[in-house]
Length: 218
Image (cartoon, rainbow, N blue to C red; front, side, top):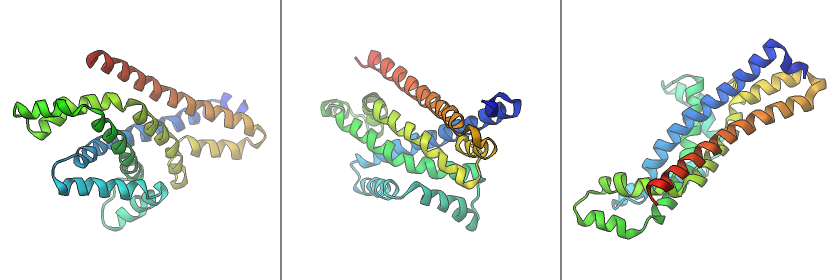
């Protein structure tokens, strides 16, 4: 374990996973916001909004993430839009994951009893109010497990950022493998453990939210 026991090795290891965590959190937040809007659009009574939502999911869910990263990493600066390498990649991963978040949330929206929305409509609540106060809170509760799966997949997808020089965990692992070729197995196991910790954190957060929502909406 010489690769990890040095001060520089431990620092680089932590920095790699910190960058991975930042990528996951920032792109996950973007995916949650955009995915929620797209899911609401897909169940909207307005045909144009339903069409836009369906088109978004079709395009982004069926486009390889690497292609989207290439478009934002190289394409956006060409047209004068540049948020920086980190945020360009975050944008691609967030928009890609939003398509899966949208489908998970849409299944939750369809799982909410229709009578509740009809009752809210009967007392004069608008569509946005029904979504915000009645339907969406219950839909989120129903979709915690598939949402967690989408964010766990996002953790693994962050490894693509290493191809573009973002010093996340996979990038750091490659550096350790080049420097400590005789400790290849230990390096793999060390980084596998780090990814397991990140996944465990997401699972723990999802479980906590699911339990709390069950208490509120039981």
